[in-house]
Image (cartoon, rainbow, N blue to C red; front, side, top):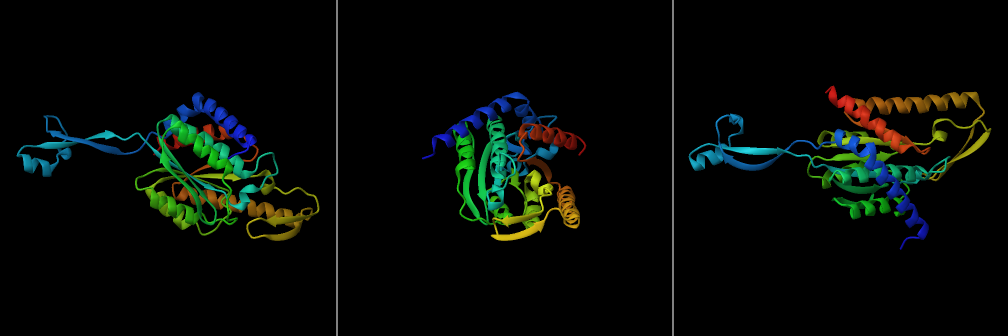
Length: 294
């Protein structure tokens, strides 16, 4: 059972997300993610003007006259949300922790998918995959995913994105659209993510907080890592430390951007300050422009 406050929060989010999806967001989603490939429909007799390369030679040999394979465009998508719920996702310097900010964005994506008659599933991952809901359609299914995003209580504080990526790669037998939602404060996941991106359309959804980009100059500050349980004290007023921290943040961001571009992985960036609808619309426009030039 869930508390009344949790249920109210879910209902408010669902209503807000549905209104957004009914507006330009839903149309933008459909224009960018149209489904991929073609699906076999039937075999029929060859007719003058048909493409010779479509002839089914096995059926033709059995029947004694030519038959062709007929295909239709496959528009239905399978969407998978792989969401990091490790301990680092509980950080915030605003009103929203990183996990809740990602949950709000994931709710928008869920309702976009359901509104477009796509299947959507969910995998919540820490050091292991803790929760999995197979892709399905329908508004009741969407509500379940949104609920799980907010109320699931992880048991492992650590992060292992490679394990999560391996899992979804094994359970998704056909090409899918995978949103990998994380702060990407992990290592040794790149090889696995690269392998998954060769089979599926992978989008990295990054979440950060303003205080992760620039620490306030307040003198001595004790920092706690919720995943390793380690504490370190730093002097935020020290110009040498501030310069080194800024350089590290910038270097990490540039390295991630270069790596994702090199492997054809689009990036959707959001933060705990909100405005997820604006971020999604901007991402859809950028992706559409990129796809036109392929």
